[in-house]
Amino acid sequence: MKKEDLKIVYMGTPDFAVESLKALVEGGYRVVGVITMPDKPVGRHGSVLQPSAVKQYALSVGLPVLQPEKLKDETFLEQLRALEADLQIVVAFRMLPEVVWNMPALGTFNLHASLLPQYRGAAPINWAVINGETETGVTTFFLSHAIDTGRIILQRRLPIADTDNVGVVHDALMQMGAKLVTDTVDLILEGKVETVEQGTLYGDESELRPAPKIFKETCRIDWRQPLKRIYDFIRGLSPYPAAWTELVSADGALRHVLKIYEAEKIAPAGALPPVGTLVTDRRSYLDVAVEDGYLRLKTVQVAGKKRMPVADFLNGFKQIDGFHVE
Image (tube, rainbow, N blue to C red; front, side, top):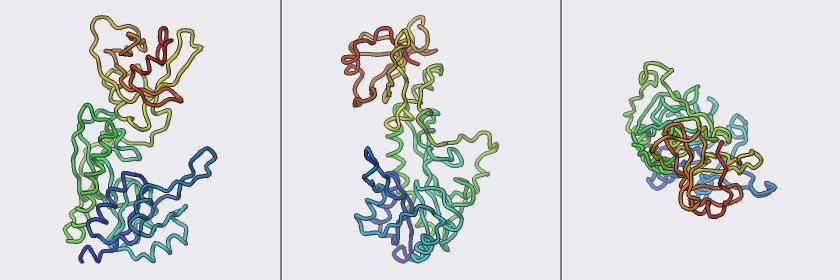
């Protein structure tokens, strides 16, 4: 079968999924339909509906779009069957019921932003950086019953530099993943797919690191952790959703939420003050004492303000003396 004859249904929602869809369209593959999430209410009263990034791109190139509320809805299933897909591709969408992923003759494969079986779950890029990994990657695998556990088709590896934040890694994996998607389709077309069972890639399931969904409370900094752990935690949540802490006055009466987007590790010179102590010249630098050094804050944001260099923050926050972080 030629790629112009292979009918593909593509499923995805955020920016990360656009690049792979774009690679398919621009590569001359036959995408017969796109499935994405329903438009999201935004604005103060939720009166404005925001289409997903995938929907916006799909409509711009004239692809039909379906936006089911429920994936087991019979009307949606009839519409999906009518597309007569030979293959379905999933990139950053949602968990599919078997009636959906088992529909096409050639199956359904997923692009996951980790080196499976490591980092199964909703936030693999964040957790790889948070955990200080020096390498990650992308994986394509055929869907099966349990999430992110199907047979692996292809993988590509990506080094993570100590200075990379999750935004940098996200964009690199997005580009790498798009190429992996088209390479995977080509293998399927050529009948050369040789899959690998995930269980053969690790000896002990306890060695696997999960990648659960991230919530606001997940993002709060624990200053009792070692310097490197806190530094990696901030990188792994920057630029979104951002690690945060509270600036607290000496008497505890004043509290200000502070998001931290960029920081630097500073080795200690002599004895360290208590964890959470702020050390500053009130003009150009702001350091937080931790158990084995200082974290120098570089880019921050106070609630209601824009992101700013720490010098601008200090210029506007004159009462910094006596504050600490919790």
